[in-house]
Image (cartoon, rainbow, N blue to C red):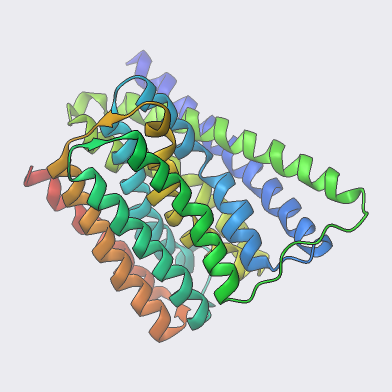
Length: 310
């Protein structure tokens, strides 16, 4: 009973720190965007997505070092699914309806799908070697370059403005707060769910992934409320690209890991299918409203069927 009370208190504290830190990170990221010749989309795709994925990246390294490959892959695939369906689905209910650009969705979406296909093809073997990890990690900067070139986004040009360093420092501090808050949230959720005696992969896919996806929800909602829609959508899809390649690969780059191949393949393919469906809807409708949001959430909830099939 005492453990549960402590875990709930930790959960509330972690969420408070996460939301506060996320607000500051977005505020100063937007300030950087106004000083640098860099579009809000690329700020979301590069800066914000890496920051909000710090929990997954840290989890990948720690879990791989401890020989728990299922925690790494389960968290990464679960985060992709949660971010592209549950998190996007909650946007119109919590932050309001907003429009997206078809060309941006198609280009970023294609890169996410490619990254997921590569990841699924590697985990199905039940082992991620160091060579596989190099490919996964390298895929992120390559895909970012492709997006920048296709979308004709300008590179950042730093002006001689001391505010850049100040805002950059505040962004870093904000993301440190996000990472700490996320860690506390994840640990408290795992403690509360331990009584369910669920397989390690499922705990990571369904529970840990929700916790490590909270930064995306908090940061993107703040961005939406500040009408920085391109930062929000850039982070939402950019985070999926990070999770599909960099997050999975970074831990196994140093510590090659074994995974539950069949289970990882099944969940990864479902995340891939859901991504294709949602990205297609966004590209066709060019907006995220409550109807679309409700459908996205249903797609996420349908993934729980896998709990009873494995």
